[in-house]
Length: 114
Image: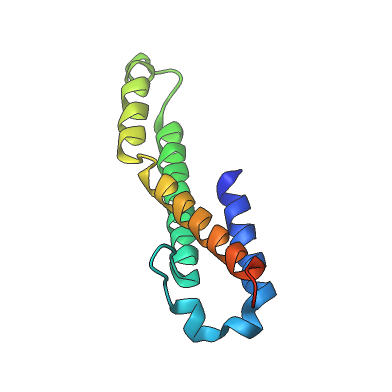
């Protein structure tokens, strides 16, 4: 999935360049690129997003009784309310940050004099 691939790419780049980057460079953001710390923070936000979505969905399904017509009729609306609360803006924003970070790091690695 895109988030897992993004996380792997960020961590791989950091591992490859950790010695030359140092902590200060990892925390410094560029004019068009987030810092490594921001990229990793975004990945944690996505993980938290999916964890909360999963737990709330699981709780809903555990509360529903298949023997209760009222529960079964209310299930689609309850499911929609959960999905409305968990819009994918966090995921899309993070994927954009990761993409910018990885592209910027590739440019730095491949540019003359690096």
